[in-house]
Image 1: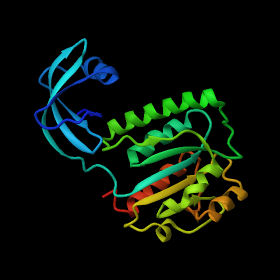
Image 2 (image 1 turned 90 degrees about the vertical axis):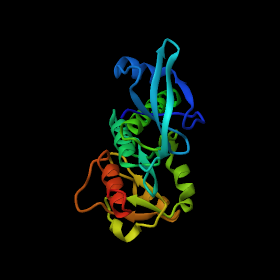
Image 3 (image 1 turned 180 degrees about the horizontal axis):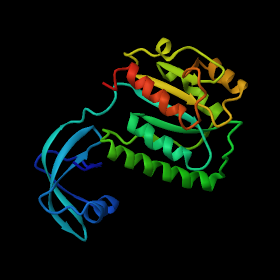
Image 4 (image 1 turned 45 degrees about the vertical axis):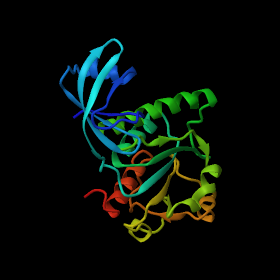
Length: 243
């Protein structure tokens, strides 16, 4: 069943009109018609089964026929801090991270980042990243749209590490196995991944001095766009969210 999000406060028996890009997607891309069913997910993670009652130039009007709690969200909120990589690699990371269950994504600028957009380009990229996160959340039937934060410096990202149950710094220089750092009952986890050239030693030191724990993803060196997805998959497995 096709999945959309709404900010409206509606419940069983209510009607609402879907407008904008979602309405265009329903009518033009999906070619849906009156009588077909879609799912709307609300801000409080409630799934609404909705029957299309009318389609017009103003939008798509639906009636809520059933409602139930959305059970698709992981038990752990993972914030992914990933150093900005070249080209469209960040788009792939964001898309797949949302599918895997990430809660928040923060692009970070480090000393070895090749991509260093100016303010105008960074804002344009942010809007693109947020749209990708929305589309991935719809495709994977998430209960939320994971937040994509503006690009920030590593020092700023390192300032709030004590807010998490554990903050993990994946570093090719070695560290503890994930199973020694992550426990199934954890509710909040931060993950730091470096750029193509890796995190500089002093940057790893900054994160560790702020409370981060160095970790390894095995004996092989993973690409910058592979490491965050491997890390998320492993964390979701350890916390019981791939079962």
